[in-house]
Image 1 (cartoon, rainbow, N blue to C red):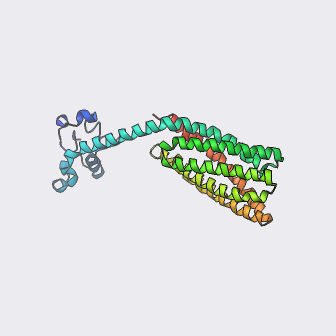
Image 2: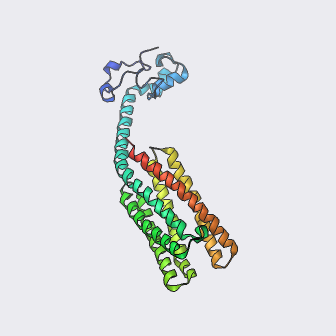
Image 3: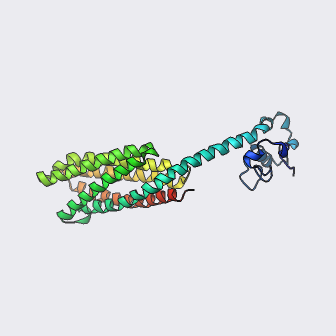
Length: 283
């Protein structure tokens, strides 16, 4: 096999030191490695040991650009290094704060279970405690999302919406305590749920975005999880409206959708842990 595919002299290449190149067959043209050289890849695909044995070498545009191949690889290497620097800086921030978000999801889930008497059947005192716990963790959660918004713009929108939703949920709770008319709380609880759904969408999208280029599978899982969350969220809103109209079906829909929300919440906890771990261990 020829020492090089394109016929150049590796020792005379001005890019050899910058690329830390081991030579064509050991470096960019190695068939058992990445085979970064397009000319080498073309020769191997067509069964040639070198460009000179190809009948189209005289008119081959790729062969004519053989002097530019090292420059292209160097440019690609620079881009990868810049990208790694971005990821490293991002990992230092997200690894820390997403871990804290992970631990905040736990009390938020507990608060959601306690405050939902359709699931837990808890007495009013525990339901109220659950609502307060959920509101407090929601505020803390929103503030942390704002903290990491420097790494992805979607976190800012998610943080603002989370804070608004938590505040609206707390107002709905106060209305129940003071006015003693639970149906009045729908004026705040339904808008709060709509805002919360949008907040989750922006958060999941932000998680997916920061994972692109690092863990594509986990990024895709965040996108899928959002669809399930949206579906159960719509189910709860529809059920609440039917409950307001005194329909038994509404209560069933709310119960099933709430259980679905719980499952999504558990999956979110798992994905958030994996996302935080990915950034903590990123090098």
